[in-house]
Image (cartoon, rainbow, N blue to C red; front, top):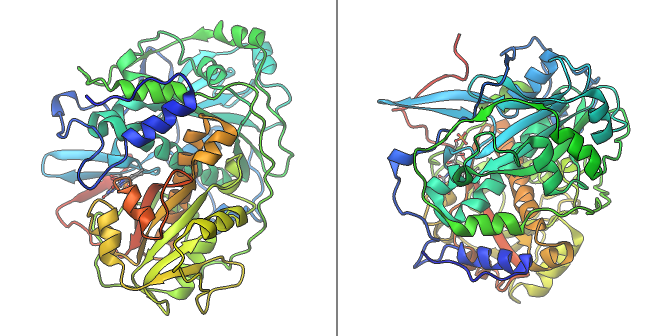
Length: 547
Ligand SMILES: Cc1cc2nc3c(=O)[nH]c(=O)nc-3n(C[C@H](O)[C@H](O)[C@H](O)COP(=O)(O)O)c2cc1C
């Protein structure tokens, strides 16, 4: 197996991991190269012996216009009840459908996952007086839309760890089981786990809007503190090969209330939490495992230290006209799917394309307020079929600083031309006109979906300088930002009657070279395509939760 040298500086480890897990035209990142069905991981984690509470699968709620998910306008915050928690999880992390083909049956979820492997696990931390009983930690079992109680936490311990929570507030946390992705994707899988966290974060943030809640990562919490409150540093059946990696903790609170600061608790408070009444043993996911040591190295190197301050966020308000007729928010969240093929013919209008791009610009409101760092990711677009727009390579910088650096680095013959019909506040630039269907396909691992849609894109992250400025832990955040953007693209595509697909398989160097970029200042971290899907008629669909 190819390994990276083991540098002691976490940033060097991250850069070495990133380099080692790039795909090249003549060599893919290291993986088994085949699917070992005998070791296929169970996509559902369960904790045997823990008390399980089934949540209502449908909750009576008035329809809500899809556009309200982003601005929350006019939504009155609901109290934290069994129904509102059920509705929140049902539209963020639940099973949305079962697909069947011959003898195979597999679940799809509201949040997408690379290869449908679903490494992301969700947890709720509910305060004293919550609708499920005593305060504590609960694990969400998507298979059953149920919560398993992992720990009962004494009220005084809760208040030491989470002081000053407003009424109606609670916490949600995400973790990744790296093995689930590694089973298929080998060494590159850490990247996919982080994309999936970003998708899940956006899914949670947008679902929080349904109840008039906000949701934001708690930036001050370290990896170690999160491991403690999630019980992931306990034995409890966790196999080292099935390491469940803490990712993030987020506060959910009524939108009308100011967000309280939630600093990392002191060691004594965490020790008290550790001494809570725990229950449940993690299920074994595979009978056997293939080890990828590089995954442990990059996971260790990117653990967040204590003492990281939140970056002040000042996203502008960017009002976007409502869709008419308004799609129902819950229906749209449930219907999100990936296209497996695009028709290679249909086009979209410039008005719809502009709206979709406006939605991915950082703005006050959801889901951008869930992240706690300034935008680092910009879109390099391969536009194929947008009526009224010249086909070609376009750039959508998502920050003024990003635009300045990209202008300085891009090849000199880029045109930097403003297309007609694009509003002044949308920084879309035509760089290179021309048919770019085959280049789009090529840089996305020769996948037809990248050339057969309306457009595809690469997400260019400000890379090495952003990591040097903040630390190796920020590597995960860069991927989370791409996942949040991806989730918005998925939903907007549905809202416009089309469909999207995340693309984790791509060649980053040729993608960058299209506009003359090279080196580590910008790297492409995720690709995406949007177009008119071609359905596979052999597949049948069943509801997420029967009966
Ligand atoms: C991070 C990420 C990377 C993905 N990469 C690819 C890809 O390279 N090619 C592809 O056809 N689909 C890709 N997909 C789509 C997934 O296979 C799809 O999301 C998964 O099968 C679940 O189906 P669903 O999105 O319809 O729920 C990707 C999805 C995600 C979230």
